[in-house]
Length: 390
Image (cartoon, rainbow, N blue to C red; front, side, top):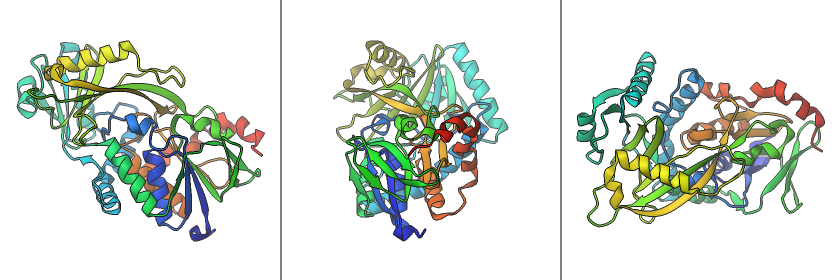
């Protein structure tokens, strides 16, 4: 089918869904995005770290390759998006520092640095004093760490605003109705059923509904789960020390914490995160979560004690079984998954949009995306597929 004649439904109006919708509309698709709360899901409360290197972990080399591909696309992606939207897309090019306090934390960072060096990644080992020269906001408890200049960040809310504007200018229609089910005739997608029972015809459907994706078609059942994360936003008050210029990640007695600088007025100067819990679709902010984040962040950045706590929030990361996202065709013809990005949602926006646009055109996906093919779970999902969805 010619893309110019195609009707595309995208389920989910987060950063991934909007970026996919914009790319498809630019290719000639007639695109409608459905989301009961557009732009207000996990993307709204994301930290915005673009950190393939500092998130790297032995055994997750496919995820690292995918992240490195995507972070390399970010400058061009952000520049084009800014031009289309007429507003800055929020890319913050400064890198990341990783700090440690006790000897156990320093040993873990040393192991990470050793691993990254075997992969040829650009990582600099620094003493606590050297780190404080880079970022004077770091406190005396920081005894050592790493500088990772190639792991930038993005202001997630500025990004969402730019994506919404650019998608609209490309002809995308965004609806605040939610998708309840993807419909098919046993061979190919026919459309979607909305939460209010309305059925919308479509030639293709992209599932980008984050943690809610598994319920939209049997072939996705059980492949994406909600992983709760709590975050805080802090605003500098008069007389307080300036926030760091780079993302600061840290291990504090084995617990990870991060602080990501922001520049957009009204959205706080720092985002502090993030807790991790698997409690279903619970999005309550807990006293313990706020306490732990503030305690650990203050040990690394003592000056934040003088900041105002301006927002607490919780979001649901869409986790997959192996931490790789689900990007690709699956199930009936015309169904494409773009979900399961876990902690890497912001990072993987450019490569996901490029890959889904390629699939909709009938082209090959970028090489590193092949490892994220949803059909890698086909044996586990075979029974669900056989049930159909009519």
